[in-house]
Amino acid sequence: MTTPYRIVRAWCGRAADAARRRAAVAGQAVAVALLLSLVSVSCQTTPRPSRTAAGAEPDVRVRIIREAPSVRIAGPARVALRPVGSFAEWTAATPIDVRAEAGVLVATDAAGVERRFDQGAPLEVRAVAPTRARRAPGSRPPPEPDLLVGDRAYPGSLELHPRSDAGESALDAINVTTLEAYLPGVLTGELLDNWPLEAYRAQAVAARSYALHERARARLRGRAFDLENTARNQVFAGRTQHDAAVRAARDTRGETLTVAGEPLRAYYSSTCGGRPMGAGSIWPTGTGWEFNAAPPLQVDAPRATFCEASSAYRWQVTRTVEDVSRRIAAYGAANGLSIKALGAVRSIIPTEVNAAGRPVRFAIADDKAKTYTLNAEHLRQALNHAADGLPAPERASQVRSGDIEFEMRAREVVIRGRGWGHGVGACQFCMNGMARRHWDYARMLAHFYPGARIERLY
Ligand SMILES: [Zn+2]
Image 1: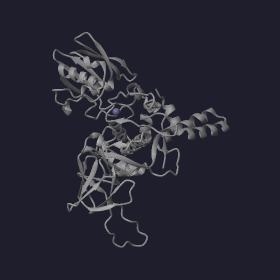
Image 2: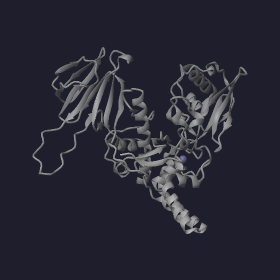
Image 3: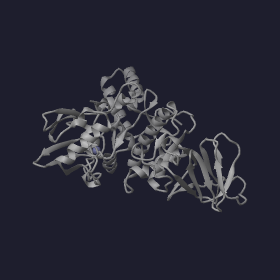
Image 4: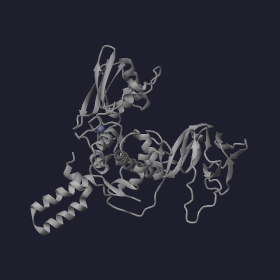
């Protein structure tokens, strides 16, 4: 879909234009070709963010606990609690427990002293730094201590939101921090520990772009948080000391994939299996979802692949016909689709395949001579969907991608698959393979998101 020339144009437009102008003055076509080839080589190996702006680093709000009855917060010896919008603050010894009671948040400190916050506002919790020893003149103050929730440390503060809509005793905990403090915890959550630094750098730029896109969207819709800490958005492991994660975020600070100056929703998944998917083929692109139509996310043709080392590069699971039929029907019922009436599955065959050979849509025929269609991503979800009386599929028997083919037997269905995840945008195991072949992160990102630019937004 995208030629190498277009990739070079997108990334090195200004350098190439300058080369053309110089060559035009010389009037030598050979010089044009030579200069352009030099530009392409250097631009594929040297990342150069195309703009430096003096913007401020954004904050980010990450939901780390969802609809829990209570939360325990530790960390520094003391924390300060304050309803958002109020000046009155309560300082308490840790650990503190905060629970939701009929929509009111009740905090209990280490000495058992209880305090009710019935203003209905979210509760902000921040660390109180220990009394500082005298510092040498000119030395920097020590960083604020992290808060501990469970066995994880979080930079920044917490916001606790009563969730009356989810029951009388439900609350959410949202970590409010800076984007650059958030990123290393995403990198350690998303990548394997021993991967090369360059793979971490590519992931840092993709994750930053995704986060900025989701942040803008959340705030437009008035949501209380920007991102979940799970694979629903990006896995976030809190504060980390992992060297490559910390360095990759620092080395790429502010660098963001953009289209027309706006952050790209830079999707990525674990293993493409060799056949990428275009976002517009499996996700909505209408009002409110226009971002799924961004040209850099539409790669659906063969591309160089480096993820053979993934255990999910090729995989196979066997399910019973009953299991497959009931899960797909349950998925249909949960989503209001006609396929909820599905009988016993007789065949599942692709009816549309993209230029890379990856199935886009399937026809599912049953023993009642009815045929239904589902797109590949919905079929993957359907095959892992809960159904009454069936246990959740074990990790080993989960259907990992929509790039699948089916062999029907008497009572069983053999499902053979490629890759893990939706296959849109970057492939993490490909990043690892590319880094080991000495690709730099800008070249990787041009490969995964052709036409996107890297801009340093702050
Ligand atoms: Zn791959």
